[in-house]
Structures are given as structure tokens and as C-alpha cells.
Amino acid sequence: MTTALYDIPGPHARRRHRLYGLIATVVIAGILAGVVLLLFDTEQFTAAKWTPFEYKGIQEMLLRGLGNTLKAFAYAAVLSLALGGVLACGRLSEHRVLRWVATVVVEFFRAMPVLVMIFFVFVALKVQPLPALVTGLTLYNGSVLAEVFRTGVNAVERGQREAAYSLGMRKTQVMTFVLVPQALRAMLPTIISQLVVALKDTSLGFLITYEEFLHAGKLIASNLDYDLPFIPVVMIISPIYIGMCMLLSWFATWVAKRQRRSVKTEAVEVAPAEPGTLMPGAGAHP
Amino acid sequence: MNVLTDNFSLYGKGLLGTVELTVYASLLALALGFVMASFRVAPVGSLRVFGTVWVTVLRNTPLTLLFFAVMLGLPRFGVVLPFQLFAVLALGCYTSAFICEVLRSGINTVPTGQGEAARSLGMTFSQTLGDVVLPQAFRSVIPPVGSTLIALAKNSAIAGSFSVTELLGTYKTLNELGYSIIWSFVWIAVGYLLVTLSISAIFNVLEKRWGVPR
Image (cartoon, rainbow over all chains, first blue to last red; front, side, top):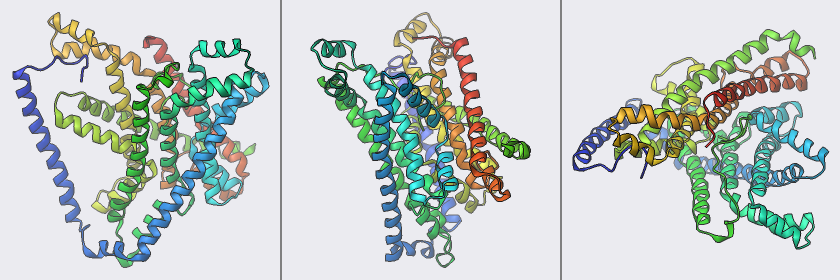
């Protein structure tokens, strides 16, 4: 690890760092122990709160919730990739009207909170929770992906495009055979990271009573017969949810790492995601 | 059209709630993010591990799950605070992970030679940090911090569903009063645009004043 902050530590500094490390470890362990003690003190580990998870019905309910979450994610992912493609085509088009329309759509939906769109579709258009959730996620993530695609295509080295044109290819051919394949390969990590955002945002379905994972958890947690096992429910749900997102994130990093060694993406200058224009919705999309 | 004029105070209250949430959560996120970033670049192993775990877990947590756990979970431990404070806590902790990453990559953009030069001039650690590294890092993190805070403002909409007064939540009252749903949502959208565009304007000014293209 090289930063501008420190020199490589000598024996004296290393000893000091070890001491600091020991103190920090003790403090962190103390905090963790405090949390566990608090959990025991408030009786979160009683049998009454944990036995429900052995019941088949409860397990099936959780699995059904998880299935619904994944279903919403699958729909949203496929549809937003498609919408992103369409909008990116619009933004890269040579026809001014098309370009303007696509730009306005993309900028508007990136600047809106996803939840506003989901609620709008759910309340104003009176549709079922699943289509409302999928529509909201698709509009938002599709617009973000459109920008990703567009910057990806524009980041392909100019010579590639010029060479293709000088071989006599038409615009569509240049796009489909030369620019898009290279851009897609280079943008794959960014696309996957955006899909992580979509997966995380499926939990918004909870707020419009879509019967997804959190919803199942809430139903179990509010059951008086099981002594309101709210904390156990959170302890079971969050590792699964966070684990799924982490797996997908790690996949994105793995792809990115593999790509850095690949010759196939050499002609694409993958811009670092950080410095963006200061429009609402640009840059990071947590 | 008269949805806005009839319910100006309701919208005003909602907008104010959103702005308050955004400001307080931003302050918390910036402070926590700074602490976590300093943990992540520290030469002490256990602090680095702690920072990394904090960032990895929070970045992969759905914000709704975090709200769910904080709003409904903390009261089980006898922590009883106003809903708005819970919301600030959840939003701030969530965004701190993103701020931390931004700050860390900002520090990493400062060339190693800068620190080496400063040390060879005999500067102490705090001088190196305060006079050489941080000013340069600050310049390059302005735009990404801006977009993270814009994302925070947009995320604050979730708080409305957990009984916090904010802009999106106003639709419920308007709906019960029988106003046109479409128009009430149009004005909610305008409100959010107002918030996000002002944040982006503020950061554009900061960027013009201090940002340096690298």
C-alpha cells in the first residue's frame, strides 16, 4: 500500500503501530462484546423467539419472499438493460429531435428519487405492486445505464471508428461490429455494479406492500405467538440480503480485474468513475 | 394547478423536512465518512479492517433494510428517539460508506512524491497531512462528494414511509383531501428537483472556486 501519507515504517514505527493495533482491537472487541451483551440482556436469544424458524411454514414464507425479490430483480434487470440500450441509441443518434428527447428523459429520471416514480406508478396509475416496482426500477436504472452505455461507446478510441468508416462500413455496422462490442466489454463492471443498485432497490417494494423478502420478515416479526422476534428476523434477513449484493459486487470487481489484463479492452479508455459532471444523478448512484 | 396554492404550507413543511433530513444526514455522513476514510488509510491493521468491513457491509445493504432495522429495531433495545433522528442516523451511516470511498480515492490521487517531498523538507506528519496532502485531495473530491450528497437527498424519500415528515409523504394527505394525484406528484417532483439542483449548484460554485482539473 503506497500513499502519500506515510513512509515505509521502520522497526520503531512498526512497534508503535502494533501497540496502536492492539489498543484498537481491544476497543473494537469491547464494543462487539457490549452489543452481544445487550442482545442477551434484552432476551433476544430465547427459544420462543428462535423456534419459529424451524417451522416449515415460516421457512417457506421466507423463501417465497426471497423468490419474489429475485423475480422483481430479474424483471427489472432485463428491462432496464433494454431501456438503457434504447435510450443510449437515442442519445447517440444523429437526429437532433431524437437526441433531445432521449436527453430529457435520461436527465429527468436520473434526477428523481426512485421511490417517487414507484409511488407515482403505484398510486396514480393504480397498478399492482410488482409492475409498479419493476417500472420504477426500470425507469431509473435504465436511464443510468443509458449514460453508462453512451460514455462507454464514446470512450472507444477514435481510431477504431475512423478505421471502420474508412473501410466503407455504414453507421449501423460501425456501431454493431466495432464500437458496441468493445464498449460493452469495457463497461461490464460498471453495468454489474448498477445491477447491484437495482437488487438493493428491490427492497423498496416493501414500502408499497409488495410481498418480498422484507415483507415476509415483517409478518414474522409482528407475530405475538412467537414473542415478536424482530431482532432474530433482522439477524436472519440481513446476512442473506447483504450477502447477495456482496456476491454481485465481488463479481463486478472480479470482471474488472480480469479486464485489466485483457487485450480486448485496450482500445477503450475506461474513465475512472469519480469525477463526473455535477448534474443531479451523475457519478455515484447509491 | 391549485393543488400547490391550496396546500402551500403542507408542501412547505414537506420540503423543509426533506431539506432538514438532507442537511443533518449530510453532516453525519461527512463526519463519519472522514473518520472511516482515515481508518482505511491508517497504518494500523485492525483499524483498516474495521473501516473496510464498515464500507463493504453498508455499501451492500439495501437502504430500506437499514431503515427497517434502525426504525423498528433500536426501540427494542430501549433506545427511544424521535423518528427524524432515527432517519438521520440510518441515512447518515449508509451514505458515510460512500463518502468514505470518495475521500479515500481522493487521498490516493495525490502523488506519492508530494508526501515524500514534504517529509524530505522536514515537515512533521500533521504538517504533511494538513498543508500538502489534504488540500490537494480536497480539490479532487468536490464533484464526487456532490453527487453522493445528491443521492442522499434522493434517498431521504424513503424516510417518508417510516412516519417522518418529508416531501414524498405529503401525497398521502393530498390524496385523502381528494386532490388530483397526478398534479400533487408533479409538485413533489418539482420539490425534489429544487433540492437536488440547489445541491448541484452549491457544489458547482465550490468546484469553480477550489476545484482543479487534474
